[in-house]
Image (tube, rainbow, N blue to C red; front, side, top):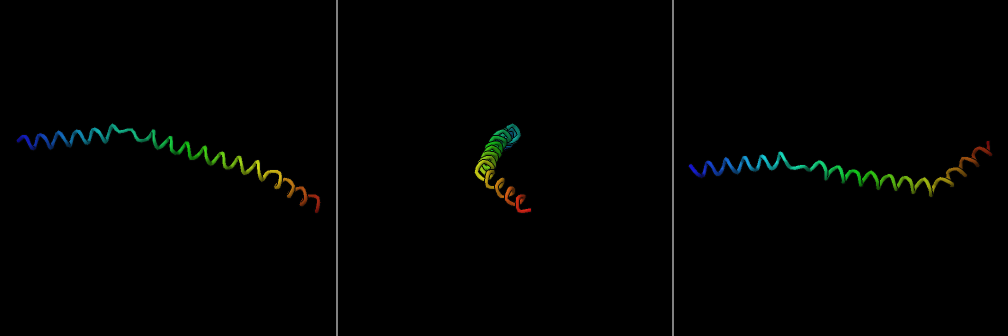
Length: 64
């Protein structure tokens, strides 16, 4: 009888731990870091390539 009670208690404890575990916050932080990293990469690309692209369009415009 006590083995059944122990099994039920263990099952309930495990179920409660799974339901109350808050892993959404950790995933949200990871995604936020990824988004920030991508934003920094895009900003760096614009700063580095911006003048070259502007010069390219200017030369095309002048050629027309």
